[in-house]
Length: 160
Image (tube, rainbow, N blue to C red; front, top):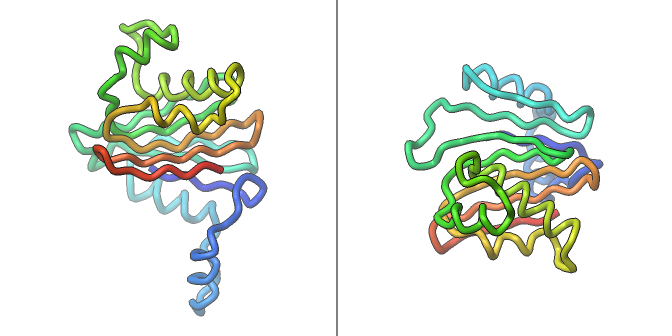
């Protein structure tokens, strides 16, 4: 999975700026990074979000128990890799059809529910998700980025 966003969406991590300034070669442009990824990962799916960013993924070298998927709904775009152990229960809780529900759609719906109706930050939904997964969620309507990576009980979440 690859997600590249402009500085208008997210600040560049200081570690990347410092590492980039120590190298004699010029910085790699976002379009070049995406092009390299797509060339090395054929076939691949990519979505350009205007000048805000770019999302891409491929099933190349995909682990059997960590499938990758993409979905977009109501200007919320999500790349998802992995599985949720509580998908059935959460699908019912968020009113999704159990036949058509998958992890990426559930993450979008859970995010939208908390963003629109609850007095909690959108990142609060991470406490509800059980499993081994990683995702990048971009809400174009609010220019918000939510990134999470959880492997079993250990995990990291980054909220922007």
